[in-house]
Amino acid sequence: LGFLGADLAMARDCAGAGVVHSHTWYANMAGHLARTLHGPAHVMTMHSLEPLRPWKAEQLGGGYALSSWMERTAVTGADRVVAVSAAMREDVLRVYPEVSPDRVRVIHNGIDADAYRADPRTDALHRHGIDPERPYALFVGRVTRQKGLPHLLRAAFGLPPEAQLVLCCGQPDTPRIAAEVAALVEELRTVRDGVFRVDGMLDPTSVRQLLTHARVFVCPSVYEPMGIVNLEAMACGTAVVASAVGGIPEVVADAETGTLVPFEARPDATGEPADPEKFAGRLGLAIGELIADPARAERFGA
Image (cartoon, rainbow, N blue to C red):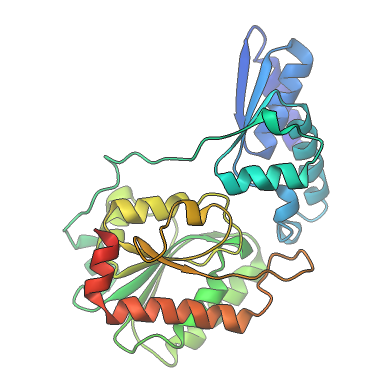
């Protein structure tokens, strides 16, 4: 309920505005309240949909029902809805059929191209013990069900022996996923070397260097309306292996800038793959092919 209090405070400060533009479910509710209280047009950008992120219940508990209600209230009342990909627009109209299609526009997310360029320096690699002479696959993202890190870790058991795996991990969503990932990392380290976990926020220079020198960047998400991190990797000249979900195929061109891995979701709305072993196998095969073929990886990253 603290979010509602913050939303009311933000809405109060919107008095006199002609248009209010909001992002994310909690701020979108503030935009809705501002429209209700003061009358400005409300434009909301949707980066994800609560009903398509059922694992949030693991993180939020009873708060997941509240966040879902707040999102539905805001999106059905908005004057315009911006979807960050064409796939996201389809999801909005499917999940919220009461929203008129002519109110939903697609504006893809972008990045600052000046902030993401290839960096030939290797300071960040040496600082974290990564061997720049050996190829590595890189993951950058939060430790959450959405980002699919456990599937990547299971895939890594089958990677070529020369491959390193570098995990730049944000804060875990829950103790449960934190423990699962930690156990998989430790198990992986018993059968192969070169497994590096870098926790916490890295400075932009370090991220650029890690992206630049990776043989392949991996995005194993089970749900991804856009996938900005793939743009960042591509801007640094790195090939991408990513699950073919959501807006990712609008970013990664299969067999041109990377490899898209087929993903079939379970029918029970959990968001998990129907066959986790099959998905991990496909993921590992795609990564391994680029690890073993530097010329192809370089062509994808060009």
